Structures are given as structure tokens and as C-alpha cells.
Image 1: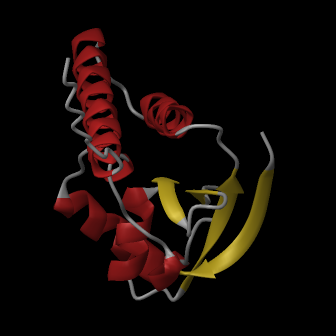
Image 2: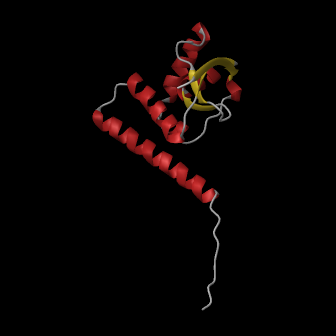
Length: 140
């Protein structure tokens, strides 16, 4: 996978489904991270991942971005990653979040079930938006 590191304004990063729906976070945690960022700055060891060619769509790092915005940071380090499909981008996000967290097998199953449903729902919405029906009358 090709990755390009860059610094981007926090207000240029887009939060959209299905990526924003993959993991849920406690607002208290965001507040604690924001306080840390105010004191120590943004930890560049963990860039926010965006999907290359998709208008700075955040794939991984929603918690860090929310904390950076709350802390008033204007810029953050971003890793622009190339993915072939939305599903590949979702799997990348889940992979990174699972390894950062300590989840039981049951919790992992639930996360993957919800993520799969969200990705499927998003694909169906996209298909329906681009679907054009046509009626053909055949007279014999």
C-alpha cells in the first residue's frame, strides 16, 4: 500500500459513513486526549489515516481528530493511504482499532458484525441512488 505523510488542517478532514460508524468512543476519553494534546501537542507517531483521492475522508483516527479539534489544534499529521475498495478501507480501520484495543472474542464479533452491516447498508444506498428503473411493455 502506498502511503504519503502530510500535515493538513483539521477542518479539511471529512468524517463520513461507514468509517465513522465502525467504532464508538466515550466523549470523556476524547476530552482526556484533548487535554493531553493541549499540553503536549499532537503525537505524530499516530497520524490520522485518510483515503487517497476521496477528499480527505478519514478512515482511521476519528478519536484523535475529535480530540485535536476539541484541543483547538489547527493542523495534524495525516497518512494518505490508497485502498482499492471501501471494504478494504473498512478492514484497514478495523484492523488498526482492534490491535489498539483489548477486546474479547464476543466484542470483536459484534464489532465486525456491525461494521459489515454498515458497509453493506452504505453499498445498498449507493446502488439505489444510481439505479434507474425502466418499464418495458411487450405487446404480442
